[in-house]
Length: 122
Image (spheres, rainbow, N blue to C red):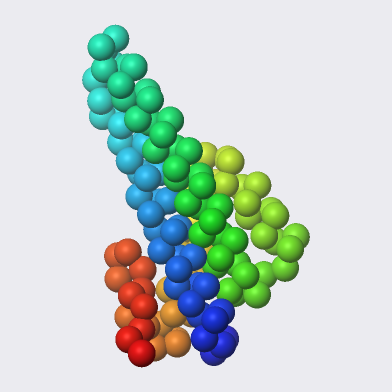
């Protein structure tokens, strides 16, 4: 895996996936840490739905980019995308994909941090 376009897809796909993971964790934090009162339920319910939908969109975009960069077939991509709609499974799949992307990016010479790898300077 040394093709520059494929590595760039992996890099950008991982960044989308990492943001989706952060949003997933934010949704869980809001659900469990915000006190249950009528006045807060409406506001945090709407924020939770927005964060959840944004996380799913980011995850799907990230999965499509990352899986094409890694050379996954269409069937594998479809199964991974379907798994994005299963709450705990989606988080585990995103973590596994991010781990695979980190290994590929490090072997290509990128430094990978908390929010993924920065683009290489030309």
